[in-house]
Each structure stands twice: as structure tokens, then as C-alpha cells.
Amino acid sequence: MSAGWVAGAVRARAMADRYPGAAGAREIAMCPSLDEALRRLAGTPYVRYTRETAGLAGAQHAVAATLLWHLRVLAGWLPRGGARLLVPLVSGFEVANVVARLASPNGPGTGTAGPPYRLGALETAWRRLAETGTPAELRAALAASAWGDPGGDTPWAMVTGMRMAAVRRTALNVPQARKWAVARAALLTARELFVHARSLPEPVRRDAARLLGGRAPDAASYREFREGLPGSARRLLADVEEPAGLWRAEVRWWRVVRDDGVALLRDGSPGPGVVVGAVALLSVDAWRMRAALESAARGGSLGEAFDALA
Image (tube, rainbow, N blue to C red; front, side, top):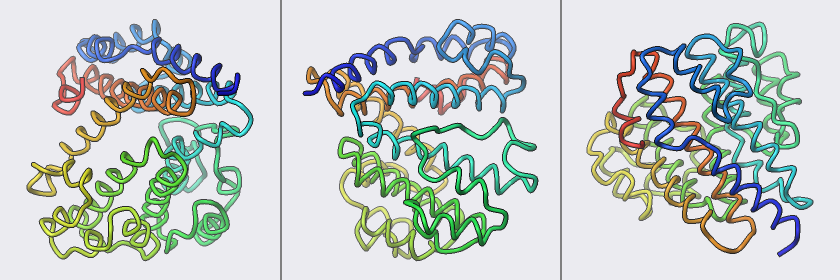
């Protein structure tokens, strides 16, 4: 293994060790107010962006921005070309930027929880997407990039297309995360078909079929959908009898990512697996911390989703 991967693995483990973890998140979740939670957050690695935030949405955005910053730092420690491993794993930040742009007629950062996430070398096509002015231009820019054509220029079609494309790209380019990507594709497809009752745009349906097989994306009922899933995704939804309970599968997905991340990080061989494991654990920690801040904003009342993961 090259010296670059050894250095990256050492840095990845060090980053994961510094984050608050379940115990730290629970302490913040039980704070009687958001202000108190933010004061405690100042003693964690999340201080970089949370120091000057106000309000729950701003604080949650700052937590996510801190995670992205640390992943950009980690990418800088990897050998030449190693950062490509992280690009699919952080693509959700680019999706979030597009969501904010579509929701704000005056451009990203206006009327949103915070400024656009800065991806630097980990971006896919954000600078090009940010320059577009109309939905048709945005769709064309997506189609000309690694994102691919979302199949429509409505906000829903473009965001759904990007989310499924992110899953596809992760499955193809990050073998350690393929199981997570397949399960995420199942959750995304189930929500669109059986919660929102929307047919998938053709490019999204194709990507879903590649990951889930042909039966699930074309299922006429939620039961038929579950029965058509591949093994790991079927287990994720095993006790979720109705689409309204998909939130439980979402929490279970985060638990799987957490447990697999721990296993990858403990692998004694420095290399991509250790880095992917660290990204998994840092992402879980940020998800958990965002939920903890929401609990503190409610006066320290722990939510069921937070409790299930923490």
C-alpha cells in the first residue's frame, strides 16, 4: 500500500476518533434549549461553522458544512486520484445545493438555512449548475455532466434524478459502499412510488432497475415491491408492513452504515476501506448530531428516530 493511503488511513482514523459519537450527541440532545446545545457544541469538531449560527435550521446546516469541510481535508491526505473515491460519497451536498437553488428564485443562499455547500475538488458539476438560470438550462447542465439526464425539468424530476444518480455512482465507484447504495435505492424508490404516489422518470427507473432488479421498480403494490427486492434491501424493509413506516427502515439504514463503518475502520490494512469506513462514521455522527439539535430545540425531548440510532 502506498504511503499516501497509509497517511490517509491514519488521518481518517484520527478524525473518526475526535467526533462526539453517540454519548456526546445524547448529551447535546438532552440540553434544555438550542442555545445551550450550541454552547456545548463549541467543544466539539463542529465548532468550525456552528460558532456563528442562529436557529435550528442554521445549526443543522453548519453541522453538515463542518462534515463536508473535514471530508475535503481528508481528501487532501489521500494519494493522487484517491479523492475520486469520496466524490460519490459527498454528492448529497451537491443535491442539497440544487434543492436550495430550486427553492430560492433569487439563487442559492437566499432564504435558505445557509450558503451553498462548498465542495472544492469533491464537486461533480456544481459550478456549472450554479450558473444556470432556468429549469431547462439546469436539466441540460445535469445531462452534460456525470449526473446524467434526470428525465424532466420540474424540480421534483431533477432532484429525484440526482438522488438516484448519486446512488448509482456510489454503487459503481465505491465497492465498499455498494450495499448501502442498493438499500438507499430501495428507500428512495419506495417513497416515490408508495408515499408520494409518483411514477419514476425513465432514467430514474432504469437506475433503480440496475440496482434492485426489474421487479421492484415496476411493482403495483408495496407488498409486491418488498418481495421483488434483492436480499439486503429486502431485509431492511422486513418488518415495515406499510409505507408510512419507512422512517424505521431509514433509521435501520443508518445503523447498517454505522456498523459497517466500524468494521471497515478496524480493518488493519490501510487503504480505501479504512477511508470509506471513516466517511461512514463521520456521516452518521453528523446525522445524529442534527437530530440531537432538533431534540434540544424541543426542550431536550428525545425523538424516536434519534433514540433508535443513538
